[in-house]
Image 1: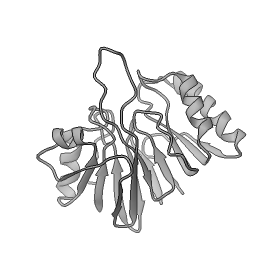
Image 2: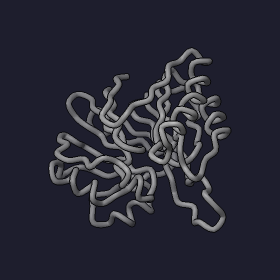
Image 3: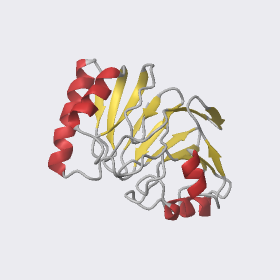
Length: 211
């Protein structure tokens, strides 16, 4: 399975010539002319993960694509073809399998409403918690680690990475950091992954890896 990182939290997966898009938000590069997309997974309804302009671009070339997300995402995207997902749900989508975890977004501040959030495990290999530190309670091949957000601190990131057995990790949700900030957070995640005998990846927009 090939993964290509776009800006912030957006990743495009490719398997057997078909694609799956994760969190195409407002902080990501415009997804123009992307073909063979079967589905989009949206972890929660914040604009940096869920952005109608991005979905419209994808639907131009993939009119039958499905959108999976929490009920709040489906409410926001009521004009699209959506499926509400909950903790424990499993869906086959072409060469992809989706399993969903968790319930709520991490708390930003007591004055800000807490949204629904779903982590996702793709093809039993790649796990991304969305805007949370939800643990999938199983080893994964590639752990996508949020490294920059108003709702996290580096100690929580490190505890999250330490708690999950993984062969590879990658930084994501990192549009808010400068190069210096990315280097600091990446170094913390890298150290924990390498201590477990794994490999850390920092992908710039447009760069890919295969797992």
